[in-house]
Image (cartoon, rainbow, N blue to C red):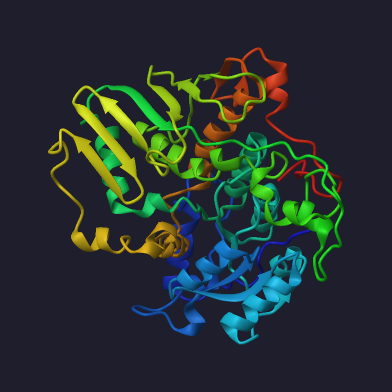
Length: 439
């Protein structure tokens, strides 16, 4: 598919010119690439009117995307939907907009629309990265749900695309927008816990290997080939369609699902947002995808993914340092000694995440993304951060699959002296769904 830069941007007055110059220079890593500003970014002061809002298309309209639509701040407005399962998108349009949102089965038609500034990508894991790359090429800003990728190499290609086209890319690890999590991670990262001795995380279950499943009729309105994307072709089965998170070809199991949150907190607290561990050791036999995994960072910090599943902080980890211990979870932490952290964020910053909906709340994370588009900055969960965090989960699953210790070069993003392990940094891709040779 051939994509064009958005031709809608016009020169305008001095204020617009100033904003445009500022935004072009604001995103580091895109030197020499003009940063395209959405027309809707030039709204007036105060509450934005309908014509000032950032126009958004939603790609992949399942449960999570419906939550994101409901939580979208008023700075943004949904204008179109795309889903390879057409009836699902049509139901969302009918229920949430009264049927006014156009619906596309092929997301590329949505990306071709000149009036769309940004997209929310809430697809299954195995098709997300390529869609996001195409969105970059189409000049759209992106909010992509976690886990960001299916394997490590496509994550690096995605980062390259975001930087080349100067896009604002937020990964849906919403704990990065929670004041409580920010406080605890900054406390550890700044050295106030002292030298970190060990980090204990959840032993997140990995994926299973899909057995042959009987062929079932493809539901009316589903483009099954497009749903499969890069994954191996299989006949339709409901267990694949709605239970994809269980299977290796489509996901990394809970290791990449909840692990995308918990391991992101580890990266944040350790100050390793642009790197990763150097050694990975599984405590199990080959293809034991539920084995505990130990990792070591270059500074000597050891990460042990060994806490029994769901028996601890699924959205964080336990950090033990010279001055005590801190357990971080979603929108909360505990300390030993209890008075280790005495200053808390404002009560309203804590309370807005407390109700039951807060477990899945993303309104303030979406708000940061929309503000970043207007301000020409990177959001709090930039694509590089998301790529590096989910890479930890992928490394754990690769080590489990091989059942042996591995050495990792986080700068080159390659295993040291292990061709078999390096072959697992990517996956075979079906024709028509390959990563682009050049972004």
